[in-house]
Length: 127
Figure 1 (cartoon, helix red, strand yellow):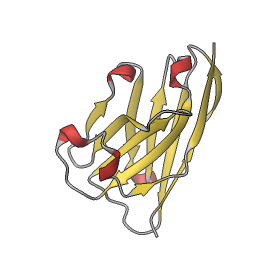
Figure 2 (cartoon, helix red, strand yellow; figure 1 turned 90 degrees about the vertical axis):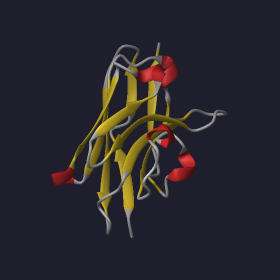
Figure 3 (tube, helix red, strand yellow; figure 1 turned 180 degrees about the horizontal axis):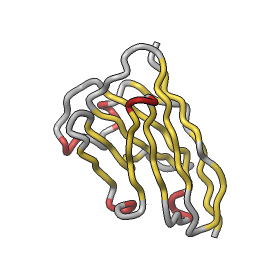
């Protein structure tokens, strides 16, 4: 079965950096879209960054533009999220997600279009 496993979370001071990884295992290594979502306690899960496989187009939430970078290494079956200049509001559980569906670009951040999810990795940012 397809599995997504996140790693790289941790605790950092405001202004620090973290690099999250999402390793894909099992069958079906190709997806139309892959993305990172995050969810803080008491809040909805929101899309942070997405990538369209093939074209490698990337998408970002306004709140993380110019600070976060989403990339993937096909040879390692791994998706990454480089997070710089972290702020307390970035603290959340971060989830890796993947979809086999072909979506409109405007739908990249819609969680209902993703059928595969990791268990999440915690990111804590202290002020």
